[in-house]
Amino acid sequence: MSYIEMLHELFEERGFPIRVGLVGAGQMGTGLISQIEKMQGIRVVAVADVIPDRAKAAYQESGVEKDLVTENDNDPIKAAKSIEAGKRIASHNADMLVEIPNLDVVVESTGIPEVGAKFCHAALLNRKPVVNMNVETDVVIGYYLAKMAESAGVVYTLVAGDEPGAVKELFDFAITLGFEVVCVGKGKNNPLDPNANPTTVAEDAKRQNMNPKMLAAFVDGTKTMAEMTAMANGTGYEPECRGAHGPFAEVSDLPKLFVPKKDGGILETRHAVDYAVGKIAPGVFVIITTDQPKIIADLNYLHLSGHGNYWALYRPYHLANLETPISILRAVFHEEETLATHSAPVAEAIAIAKRDLKAGEKIDYLGGYTVYGTIEKATVARKEGLVPLGLVVGAIMTKDVKKGQPLHSSEIELNQNQVIYHLRWLQDKMLGYV
Image 1 (cartoon, rainbow, N blue to C red):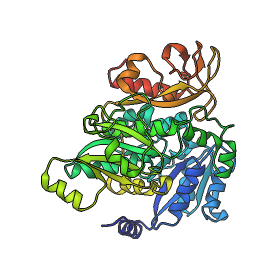
Image 2 (image 1 turned 90 degrees about the vertical axis):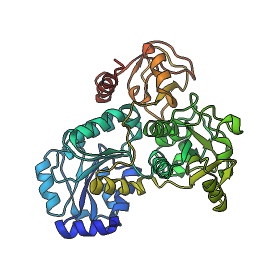
Image 3 (image 1 turned 180 degrees about the horizontal axis):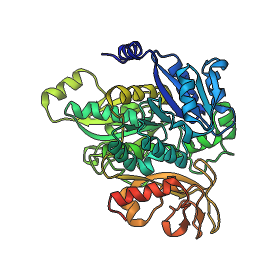
Image 4 (image 1 turned 30 degrees about the vertical axis):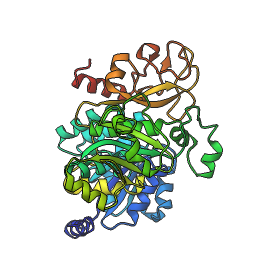
């Protein structure tokens, strides 16, 4: 049965749609509401955002009538009754949102590690399925959240449409058919500029109607590295080197480059995560191989982009928030995830000094002026005491660190008042690292 048929059947049975709660009404969150408004049998009925009137504005931009929206910051039972009456809830309180009893699923869409940690954790404590668009949180505590969801008997998942989810779908497709996957990866549409900050990208951000902090996090590589870390931990494929290789490439280059060196490529191993700069973006790819002669002949007959005994499964797009409803439906109808970390993480997104940092300085935010993120093997990060990127926001430097150098735990005082700090400790404890 298709999802549209399942939605219709569920609506006929219950008399009301799937009810979605959302935290974060920025560009991604508003786009998600807008897409769901075009669908049958599902609605975003509660939205929380700390910025005044942002939740209401997101509803209105998505075509929801003003008189359907009611504000509620403190009373989940009253909110539930309003939802039963066909109203939509606009709130500033994410803690209240997860306590609304008649929500079927909740979605995190802030991109802020601490907010994501608090929200996902609280939602799972309330035994609500969690669809997480916040990869910045997942790469720090995704293993813990996945295990917590298992214990609660609900789903925790990253989303279809973001690169990690899109890669995992290709990966699952390939290994289900019996192919060996040699490399998983994504495209980056602009050259890596670790010096990018909200000031340097301000004009481009205005032109693209983006938050300058978000655009800076794309340009300085933080988003790409976090996304690759999620890919790595969801598939078990490590980066070969700090920051990965990241060559310029055309689509036809993929099965030539992302293969072992002995076969003319750039990889030392056969199971790596990486990225390419150029027209590959906004696509994702996996490189497959097989030793079965008939399958090799068929792949060549079907004109799949290949070189030698390697072929690229390439998807030229990812629709981000617009595809997120697929993960929502997968979680609600099948109790299945798109991507989650169930084994010990193999990669870490670590923090690198964006400029010379002095003792006593406070780290600002991702996409800011002080740090950017890069990917590293988890074993190396632990051995060297490198600080996970999602833990450094609000931390205080205790020693000077030169531009371009990674931040070590001995050089920084983390903010121990943050939920994400304590959940990361619990994750490390579960894994036997502390």
